Length: 394
Image (cartoon, rainbow, N blue to C red; front, side, top):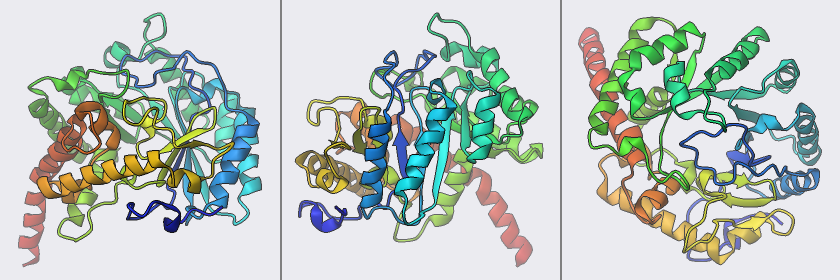
């Protein structure tokens, strides 16, 4: 059954899809116990079955939300606790259902502690895009990224990174910025350069699900975050090491977009642009972090189960209609009230709900830092350069 706009309630308007990210949680279990993790069920060792995967990919490819290709992200808890053969079999299942031969990319986010020769062979064979979670040098990483006994993980992570480098596997790094990290832009930059890391993304410590508090909620965070990002930008610009920073790239792109009538497309607010699936086949949309969390008005945010529900049926459900309507209302509030809307497009629903208690709301901690502060910092950095080029060209 194909998913079309006409299948959804008449009160819902706007685009549905196309699918950009299919986020699969092969198991909720993680071998680490990071203090800021939002996942509520990290001790559960249940694994997604071949039957669930078969039903999932049948549902995806029978719908009409698959356009010019999409990315499958294997994520949460730690994907590498499952053996390489699990993924080899999963890729065969995808190929079997992908009759139109739509381009499907695969990405895997890992804490790197379980990487070995067999894993690197699978990664290279299937051209997996690898993200490694590490919070910088040991004195920063081991504050929050700990074992279940409270021990540090930095040594094991760096062994995993060395394994990737030894096998010539490209990877990027995700670093979570906590209040403590904001004092160490130079040390973080040196860590990336010294370890041959050429692409980094900064996540902030967010308020989501079980992580009900963030160290970044402190009163002086905005000023310290801006100072950190300003210094890090200067280090990257002067360093000559070719380090790419996701936040600088995306914010610069948004600034170039300014003045058009269509703000950047925010996939987290477009239904079925992102589909998240847990190990039991339950699926949701919008922010991936919603899956597995609970709320009073929406329950567990689950829209259906691949064993019994098509994507079209989920899009026609009352729960989907309520979530979509409230998320759209929140985006409209942002459009009317926020002067940064042209650089953002409406914010992440999961942050709005767990910080403000409603999708139909506006500013969040993530928004203040990862949108507004970054725009201001990059405008301060890039505007003088643009003015200088215009003077040289005149």
